[in-house]
Structures are given as structure tokens and as C-alpha cells.
Amino acid sequence: MLFAEQSWPTLAGLSRDIPVIVPIAAIEQHGHHMPVATDTILLTEVVSRVHAQLGDSILVTPVQWFGNSDHHLDFGGTLSAPPRVYLDMLVGITENLLSVGFKRIVFLNGHGGNDVPAKQATFEVRQKYRNRSDLLLLMTTYWSLESEPWKRCESLVQREMGHACEWETSMMLAINPKLVKEHKDLKPVEPGNPFRPGSRAWITKDRTEPGHIGHPHQATVEKGHVLLETFSHDVARWIERVIAWDGSSWDG
Ligand SMILES: [Zn+2]
Image (cartoon, rainbow, N blue to C red; front, side, top):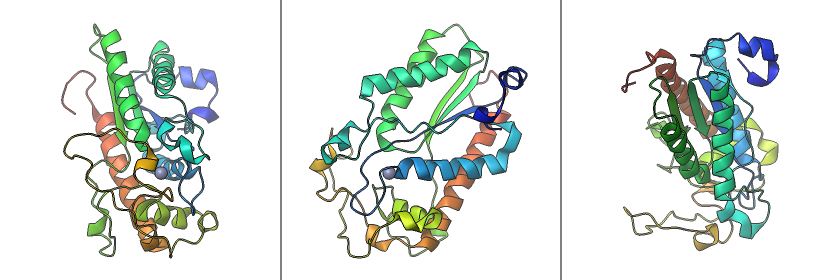
């Protein structure tokens, strides 16, 4: 069920146990060959496929395009909420939903820069409502559910998400090839090893001159179909666990 297409009385009449899926994306540079709305377009497709599988057992809010992309600002083509503004915005959306009784809130993320603030938002709200035992506040990123798309498509080169990379370019080719410019001659940009397994702060210019990270020259429409099918399937199976939650247990 799509939040934006309902009237307020219809929304008020829904079970308060319905999971509310809040998709969060971004508008930011995606190299020389991909549109700045890439993350929003890809997440919209994944969410549409998940909705097709789960229907009225979930409530899906509009995809939020305004993300935390300060690390891309040097390139232009980026509309970013500074990290603390973004954190407050996600807390605000969560509070909106809690204030009318919804209890299962899921941020479904489609952009790396939203990962930390989205986890922080759910953490802060949980601390605020610490006396309640009926809240389920979750966050995941659609490619981070231990999916293994290479098992269904042996020609996939990457084993992790990059940026404007083999994976994202392939998915865009499958959704709307007109939005992908020449990519076969692009040079790969390796993810490197920035003090792993520690975590190093970065701006995108630290890592790439053209703006992509990964192997966009390896992208094909066939790979894109496999990636979209795999990710949307795995997200839907994970959300089924949210639907099945008993309303109080820690485990799910
Ligand atoms: Zn992206």
C-alpha cells in the first residue's frame, strides 16, 4: 500500500502493526556516465518490486531523494542535507509516524552516506521512548542483506557495491538505458584498502577523479536484471520477518 495515494481516514484505519517502509535515497554526482538521481531511481525500482511482492501487508512512504551526500559536493551535481540536518529529518519522519501510532518503522536505504545517520536516528528515537516495549525501529540498505548476485550471474566482477559502478550502471541499463552515457571505455577505479578493517573518513575526491568507484565498463543490461531481481527478492524476504514479528520479542 502506498502512503501517498491514501486519504488520511484510510491511513487512520490501518492496523498500527503494519510495517511502514521509508525509502531513503540521494541526489549526487554519479560519474561522467550516470544521472545524479541514480540512487533515487534505483531505490524507486527496488521498492516498486518489493511492493509488488508484499502489497497491502506494508505501507510505503514516498522515496526521500534528499540524502546525506556532503562527501560528493566538490563535483557539483549534488543536493545534500548536512549530516546533522539529515539526522534530524529522519528523526522527524520517525516521530511523525510514531505520533499516530505506527510501531514498526523501517528505513530502506539506497545510498551509502545515509547509512550512519539512519542508524543513529533509529538509535536516538529508541532511547527517547525507552519505556516502550512494542517498538520495532529498523534500518537496512538494499544491497546489504548478504545477497550473492554473482551466484546467479557468473560474469559479475564486483563483489560489493561501488559508486556508479558495474552494479549501479547495470541496474540503470535495465531500468532506463537512455540515462546511461558511454561507459565501455571508462577506466576502473578500485575501492582500495583505506586502513581496513578500521574506518577512515573520506571525501569522494580522495578516492576517484572521474567520480565513479568500481568497474562501470563491465556493466550490462543482463547483469542489471539479475541484480534488481536478487536485491528486491532479498529485501522482500527480510521485510516478511518484520511483518511476522510478534510485537514484543527481541529476536526476529
Ligand atoms: Zn549510487
